[in-house]
Length: 121
Length: 107
Image (cartoon, rainbow over all chains, first blue to last red; front, side, top):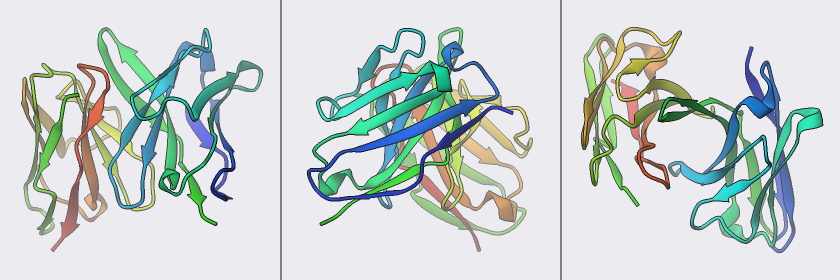
């Protein structure tokens, strides 16, 4: 079945970097783009952007430019989210989600299980 | 950015009750509206796409309606497994935005 499996929780100090992985199975990674979504503790969902899995071209939404980098390795069907110069406010659960398109409609399905990134000194 | 506002923020209902959640967009999103369910500690799950298309495997007790700026998610008969937070999402205009969520609890 189609599944996205993310890497485990991370505890990082302010200023460090983190790289979260999202491994796709059950389908060809390059057939669908991948989105990333942030959920801060007790908060709602924020769309961070998406990566074109054919070209590797990323698109970031406002607020997620500069320190956030989407990448992929098609040989292992995996996309990545790297966050540099971590701040306490980056503490959140980060989800990858397959970006499904039908005609002009889009939705996220399925989602990875989420990766908790905690930034604390 | 298009703002999505859900109401209520939380609700408590009895098993078997009909539950309605509203999502209002700050401008028309036509039918580019999705609904997700997030159970505690779990990832969101797609329930409904394009305002009213029920996803395969989602119980028929769920339904979605609306277009333009006003949308509803209805649970026709609330079950214990429906305890979750529900989010709407518009994909009409980038950045795609989510509502703040509606938490559904059993009374």
